[in-house]
Each structure stands twice: as C-alpha cells, then as structure tokens.
Amino acid sequence: MKAILSVSDKKNIEIFAKELVSLGYEILSTGGTLAHLQKHNINAIDISQYTNAQELFSGRVKTLHPKIHGGILFRRDNKDDIESAANNNIDSIDLVCVNLYPFKQTTIQTDDFDEIIENIDIGGPSLIRAAAKNYKSVIVVVDSSDYDVVISNIKNNNNSIDFRKELMIKAFSHTAEYDSFIANYMNDRFHNGFGKSKFIVGKKYIDTKYGENPHQKGALYEFDDMWSKNFNTLKGESSFNNLLDINAAARIVNSFTKNAICIVKHGNPCGFAIKENLIESYKSALKCDHLSAYGGVIAINGTLDVNLATLINETFFEAIVAHSITNDAIEIFNNKKRVRLFTLNNNKIDKIDFRHINGGFLLQEQDVVLDSEVLDAKQMGKVKADKNQIDDLLIAYKLAALSKSNCVTYVKDSALVGIGMGLTSRVDASKLASLKAKEMGLNLEGSSLASEAFFPFRDSIDLANQYGVKAIIQPGGSIRDNEVIQAANEHNIAIYFSGKRHFLH
Image (tube, rainbow, N blue to C red; front, side, top):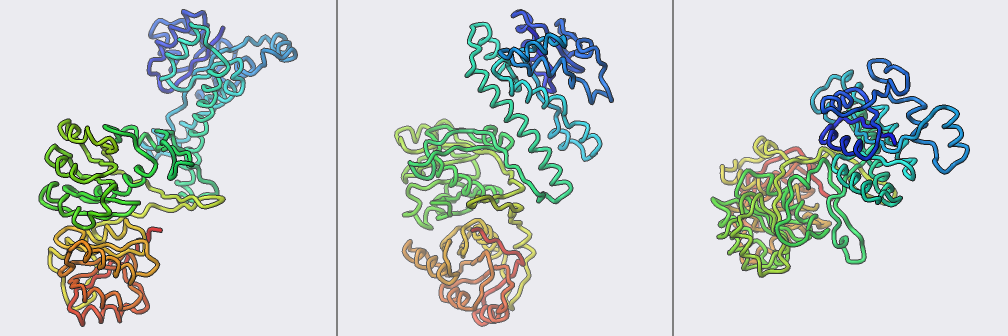
C-alpha cells in the first residue's frame, strides 16, 4: 500500500506518517514535507525518485505525473483500468494526505503579486480532487484533525464506503473554498470586489433547532472561524432568531466604547443607554420600552457580573450576550430554563454585505457608521448644539442607522427614549416614537433626534418641536431642505446635516 503525504500545514504529520508506516504503508512525499518526515526518521520516498521525473520550474511541477494520478484514479474493480495500470507500471496509491499552499495567509502578509501567485497551489488540488473522485478505493485526508480517526478506522477495519464518502465531501469542500478565495481575491484586486462572479463560502458552526419558524431547517455558517473563536455558549441553545437578534444587538453596543447596553426585539432596538456604569445603563435602557423588552435579547458591552445579573433576572430575556460573564452571574440564571447565556468578543465588521432575493443575491459594500459623520456634521441652522446634545445626537444617529428604515430615534441624557422604525412614512415613525414614549411615561422634552435619511418635508420638524426636541441630525439632500432648516430656526432647534444616508431595508 502506498500513501502520498504532501502538506503545507505540517501539524502532527510525522505522527500520522509513523502510524501509516506501522500499518504497512509506503510513504511518498515531496519538498518540505519530505524533509520534515526525514528529520523525524521516517522512511519516505521522494516522488521524483518514484516517478523518475525531476521537479520542474522551481517546484511548480512535482506530482503531475501518470504514475501518481494513474495510481490514484484507476478503478480497482474495472478490468480495463487494472490492465492499463499493469501495462504502464502504475501501482495503486491508496491514501492521499494533502493540504494546500497558504494562499490566504500570503495575501494577508504581503501585497507582492508575484509572491501571491506563487502561493497558488496546482498539484495539491489535483491530487485531492483525484483522490476524492476515486473515494471508493482511496482515502483522502485534508484536515489534520482527521488523522486520529483515519488511523483508528484503518486499524479497526472500519474503512467503509460511508467513512470515505465523508472524507470525499470534506475534500471537495476544501478545494472549492480554496478556489473561491482565489477568485474573490482576484476580483477584489482587479474589479473592486464586483466581478462577474462572487463566491460566498462559510463553514457550518452549528445547526439551529429550526429556522425562523419550526417548519424550517436552519444552521449558522461562519466566515474565518468568527463564531467558533469568539462566541461561547454558557447556558442554553441559540436559536436561528436568537442569532439574528444577537447580531443586531452586539453590532449596536460594539459601536460604542464601554458601558453600552442594547435590548433588541425582532431585530430592532427597543432600549439602549450608556451611563456611568452598566447597572445604570441597564435601568435606563429598560425604561424605553419594558413591555417589548420582555422575551427579547440584551447585549452588554462589558462584563455581566452578579449585581447586574440579579437586576436583569427580574425581567425575562430569551438571550443575554456580553463580552464576559462571571460564574456568580451564571448561577443567578440557573433556575430560568429558557434563558440563554452567551459571550461574544468580536468588533470586526465584514467588508461586504449580501441579501438573498429569489434567484440570486444582492451584494454591496458594508455600511459603516462613523463618529465623524456626527462630530463633523454641518450646522445648518442658527442654533448650535451643546456638548451633551452632540453626545446624544451621536447615539441617536448610530441607532437610527442600525435600525430598519424608515427610522427616527430620540435620545436624552445618553439613553434611548423613543424610536419608530420600519415604517413607510417618516412622519408616522416620529408619531409612533412619541406615542410609545408617552405610553412608557417618558418625556421627550430636551431630547435629540436622528433620522437615517432626509426629512422630505418640514412636518417632522414641526412634530419634533411639539415633543420638545432641541437638536436634530439627518443626512440632508431633500429638495425642501431649506424649508426643513427654516422650521428648525423657527423653533430654535439645532439642526445638523451629516451628508450620509444610512438606509437599512
């Protein structure tokens, strides 16, 4: 029996090779892998010696040879294939262990295109695909975490078709992901990321119990180990809808430096605050809409300790996510079977955003909301906002940008006191926010207002004056901007234009 070992990631390859040798395999290898095995006193044959063909073009051609690919691909149950192999002195190769040149890592480390090109693997994908195609007779291994199970199955005669089939699927997934990254990189470099094709590749992190509804299947697929490296389940099981809300809430709190708490229900914030500590932030956030908060998801930009946990435990939340959670805090929720606890430590925002529509998907650059859009916004009226109002405008602006359009947000003393979102009319969004605030016993007097898109008419400004709003920020860009500014001046409201719209459909 023969096995080819040619890996870029050499983790535990010497252990794997020793086990294969003990099971009677003859090892064929190349380049760095060969040197690594020989360093560990493992008897391995140079593929060039085996094929009697030298490596060419500085190693660009090493394994592309009939004795290699023929030995992998010939069908062991096909009379003609067996005869052809014998006539051409081709021995069977029964195991192929290959992982690929570090193309992705190279693109991170350098912008030298010649070096990047040299890290596009040619022989490796060919070996993997050949072995995967002939999985009925060949074991293909692309992941070092599979070494132990492969050895165990060979030793225990469990080298079944079903086992090799799973390795085959993983192998084709490995090469598909590799080629997809290369294609996406080339389109990013030469076509601004919007070439004729775009490949969305994710690895399954978890199956969810179901999708948005019980009759739908669901799962979470991740990019670059984002969830597996940064997300920890401490209690309960995350549902499909939990993950959507966790994503929305975490993105909002991570837009601020510390002490931010956001409560989300069905993808939109129904509470938010930044106070001197997380206890006060939570109290203020809950006031915005404690009725909607029930059964929602809460995100905490900081540590959930026992004192905060005791307070939160007075209201039912389906899921709580924080940067960290103390053991004492976890114990507080032990008797709440339906409460789910998670930690998530990641401030990274994906560069692209895509939305599925029937028959395809829409691709766009990620929308990023910058502090400078508020801090450098243009004062359009005669009234200038004070520092506290600017702070409130910054919070209101980010919340509006990260909530469903049409959206208006009212913030007072660094806490959300009113929000209307997902409405077909901006005036209706303003009215809804006011009605909800009144229902919650909140006073909008002295608040700051943000809109993620321009006000088309002055009516929203007139309403804001009725509610006692003192400062407004919006992108501007309406043909009636002058009327909007005039209304703000009439009511002595500070008005600023950011010049940047943030629709979220």
